[in-house]
Amino acid sequence: MSLLYGIGSVLMLHRVQADSREDFRPNRDMAVSPEFLERFIADAQQRGHTFVSLDRICDALQAGTGRQLLALTFDDGYRDNFTLAYPMLKRLGIPFTVYVTTSFPDDEAILWWYAIEQMLQQQDEIALADGSVLPCRSSQEKLDAFVSLRQLIMALPVDRLGDRVNALFEHASFDWRNICAAQALRWTDIDELASDPLVSIGAHTVSHPVLCALPEEQVRAEMRDGRERIEAHIGAPVTHFCYPFGSRNEVGAREFELARQLGFKTATTTRWGNIFPRHRKHLHGLPRVPLTNAFDWNGFRRQSLRRFSRGRVVTV
Image (cartoon, rainbow, N blue to C red; front, side, top):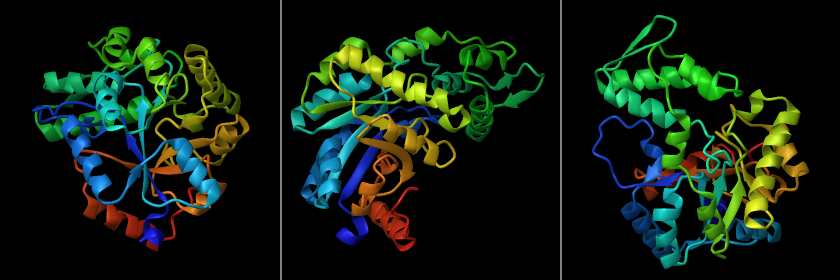
């Protein structure tokens, strides 16, 4: 089975949150429940998997050894990483990485995906500034509206993004600083996490942009400046990076090469895949496996088999 699964997987998470009874939650797959995560860890260990740090994954790749290794990674920098995930993982002795977008603890992140979700939950229609109206009475209409708004927002220039998002709507005006402060890690949280040997702090840019849409020097600055800001706070090197959004639509060979030039040991994408020995030549384009409340081992095996049968074990 090692031919199918390689040396293991880097697992992608964002948040740990209690289950919600809200029917419309387009961001639901960004969170796992505390109960699910603890069950998953116990089940994985019972199946022979070992939870390790990203450094251990990197070492295993370089040495060409390792089997059934799992590394937990959390993207962005949500406060529940500290308040819910950390106490549990510390109690269980499970290493993990938090990739921090520095605009999160700086209260400057534009968390439009949560603002739009909440707006759609509360309203039956959304009036846009161009005069069009998005109906959102049913769950399907709300989802269609969310997808349409996501496409509009993802295409906006990143400068003054909060103002640009507000300008899309006829009536809405989001208080981005308060939205961010309610959701994001504090620098004091990050300092405490970084002081624990179980925890690695990785870089995830300054502003979480779509990197492929930016000029090369701006991409380099996002990667470099985010890392340097974290290092200044925690007083330790930051050696791992994660690309925002991270699919084939947002990052590619240029971004991989920049991460290598900037000296990161590894850089992870959101491309689905396990880690194979040949990834030691592609440390700056590593795939991950998303972990959601819907995860099941049979589905994981089927997806691994499909990817393996297509030969898709290298990300470039």
